[in-house]
Each structure stands twice: as C-alpha cells, then as structure tokens.
Amino acid sequence: MTAKADLLEAWGTHLAQGRRRSPHTVRAYVATASRLLDTLGETDWPQLASLDAAALRRQLAARRQEGIGNVSAARELSALKAFLIFAREKAGMTDAMPPRLRGPRIKKGIPRPVTPDEAVNLAVAVDEDAREEWIGARDRAVLLLLYGAGMRIAEALSLTASVLPLRDTLVVTGKGAKQRVVPLLPIIRDAVDDYVAKCPWPVTHENDRKDPLFRGAKGGPLSQGMVQKAVARARVSLGLPPSATPHALRHSFATHLLGAGADLRSLQELLGHASLGSTQIYTRVDAATLLDVYRNAHPRERE
Image (cartoon, rainbow, N blue to C red; front, side):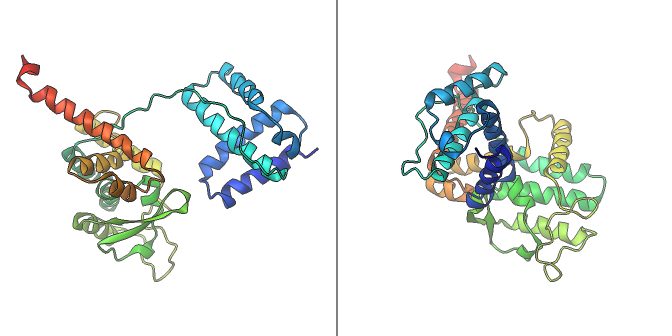
C-alpha cells in the first residue's frame, strides 16, 4: 500500500507542474483526492484505478449529505475524474478514461455587465476615494485594464515592470500559462503611465524584470483583495449593485464588444477562453440587454 501523503504529493505535483494548474485549483483538487482517500483507507494506484462509477456516486452522496450544492458537486466530480485518470496512468493502464458518471445539472448564470458609463465612473471613483494620490492612480489603471482590455484581475496584477513602456498591444499570460495579445487603448496606457509617475516605489525593469508593475501600499505586489475593497467602496458611493465587481468589468468588456459587432472567435481570442463555448455565454448577455432595451422602449411595454 502507498502512503496517503505520497499519493497526494504525486497528484499535487502533477497538477502544478505537469498541468500548470493554478495554486487555487491544486489545493481544491488535492483536497478532493484527500477526502476520497480518507473514505477508502489504505490503497494504492492500482486499487484507485479500479474504482467504478458506483464508487464515485457513493463519494458524491456522502458530500451531498455534508450540504454541498450542485455547483460544488459538479466541481467535486470533475476533480475525482481527473484524479482517477491520473491513477490509471500511474497504474499503467492503457485506457485512462474515468468511469462514466453524469454530474448534476447546473443552471448557468448570465454575467451581469455594467454600462460603459458605470465602468468609467467606477475607475474615476476609486481614484478620487483613495487615501493617497498614487494609490488612486494605481487602482484606476488596474480597472481600466480590466474593462478596456478584458483582462482578468489576476492577469493584471501579475504584470511586471518588464511590460514598460506600454505599446499598442500587450502579451498577457492567462490560465494554463497560455499567452494572448490584447490591444491597449491610449486611455489605458496614459493611466498606467500616470500611476508609474506617481508611485513612490521604483517601477522599472532595468533593476529587476520581475518587479511587480502594481505595488501595494508597502511596496509589495498588489493583492486582489485591496482592489476589490476599493471597488466595493466606490460602488456604494455610486449606488451600483453588488454585482459591480472587478470581474464584472471583464464581462462588460466582452458584452460591449459583442454588442458593437465583434465576432465570437475574435472575442474568444481577446478573452483567452480555451473553448468557444465559454465565450458563447455573452450572446445570452447581449440578448438579455436587448430585451431590457425593448421592454423600456417599446410603446406597448410602457402602456
């Protein structure tokens, strides 16, 4: 039998190094595998490889009794299947496909974009509400990257000073270490330049190409939490709903481009989606927006 710690270490290393999964995904998938191993007791790769759909169903049922919902159950099943694929490969099986088991149905929510004016007003508000001028310039630059270039907040905060000086396009490293090219509007470049000029910490790539572009108050890398808190304060002052988050700015970027005539394939490339299916949800957003316009404008609807 193989020690549980050894199994989990091999699994975590495979995810982090072999599959280049994010630290958050690695933690979640390792935790799922750990729960399965606790249920099974002493085991090894061949025994794990022999697990069938009934075993997975029992594991999910136990988790259901603990109170997890459909979304969590679907993620749990996905992690379990990935773990069993790995186990079958480690056991030397030629067929590494996991047992067939359909997950719970999940009603996909439609992202809630903000309007162009609200996006700009958010960026201005975080600038004006900041306790220091350079912090306001920093937060404004980050938000403009999210809305103006469709970047994920993690992508924006992972930028280093080596991207300076900014040009018309920027190479962004997204999920799975995949790179894509995004265009940068002059307003975004100007905002970043303004932040760099005001930042009390050195933001140059001559000294160290790994220096973070966006600095925290004490000079370290800026955390997502600080940006989220700034946006939370700003949306209250602007009277915006709780859905107006930093990530909503990326949704807005996609929705507004689609509404202006961008095709799905181009949008997929700009967003860095692995599949077109992830991008197609924005057609639903755009349809919802059109329906709202119809309801507000059609004479019959106003009677």
